[in-house]
Length: 501
Image 1: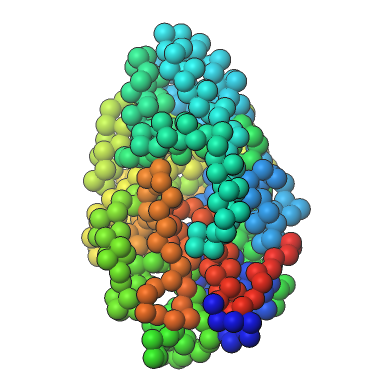
Image 2 (image 1 turned 90 degrees about the horizontal axis):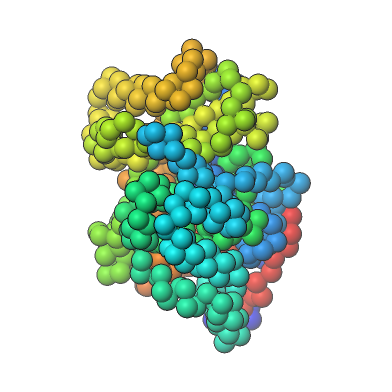
């Protein structure tokens, strides 16, 4: 701790995504002069949307944790001005999985409805279903006790955490090392076993992550903010500017300037330099450590993570603007394919389709946006990017596969398509800089692994965002930004302050 005198006043923030905007907001709340440099021409980073022929294609939010006053995230979003005066859309179900014969598993957000439905699908699995429902009801009582960074926990914070976790401690211990797939194997009914696994079909995805997600849906703590991802990001940008923060777009940082073991500013792609008392990196972790800092401050822990820790996979999004009203259809459906097809190096046996008809800002009246999300091989697309013609042809092939599958379930839809957009892993990488096109950073392992906001041997420098903590996403980005500023305040002898937007 530096004492009671404020020795640092100015802060440069690299990246204008959710982490960078949040860091800017909290730094301004605590009296620091701030300047965000963002390489894109809009705020939000991965939390973004784009328009095509009158349709809005959303590239990020499916649901947001903390849209009501349950978990601490709710207070954080209010501090950031993200959800005030914004309608939140809630759905009756998380998704529906449709088998080859039309059999349907509805993942109801209400736990009692989910139990009734699953027992109707497979009475023989009542014992496993009872186990699942009992665990979900325990996790309903779980709340994040604090948004402080771990190193600032007081004894009281730890006590509150123990009290908060006590109702689920037994279930957490039982399931903490179990993957979602492993629990799926408990079902004897072949359809239910496969459909349950399809909810989160990621290798190694922790079962506890499913339990938390569904329990919080039942509590009504999660919804979709009307307007989508870009409008959500713009709301935080507005909060930041209202607080007096400065942001420069189309401004890519090339290097972090280090003098005498301290970060003192940034050097831009055009060679210009900007100086400040503090530098916060809220952009891609790999680029920060290996390029902007030239690999000079890598710890063994960081090397291990970047060499071998699993990432959330790269993805593709095929978005369709359709002159057809899908509002009476399930908002999110997984359709099992007739067989397994190879999509650019990845075997696929199902496709997820989601429509946004409950949000009137997404499509013209009477029309719909339908999007499909597909796991993809970043290396394949990176190599393909060297030949533009082949790259575009491959995107057309993926779009055709998606459209053909949608046509099977909704005949005539092909002729109603007015806009098509395909975002590949290299699209995400190009616009956001995200390493290997991963849209959520490190894969959640069921344990809260934290890389931290500081680097040994480098003063006046902090990191925040999804690369500083396992289990990425929009809440993680904002939470780690809040934590980095709180640490900075403590080191400057300042009480960390927040206000609501």
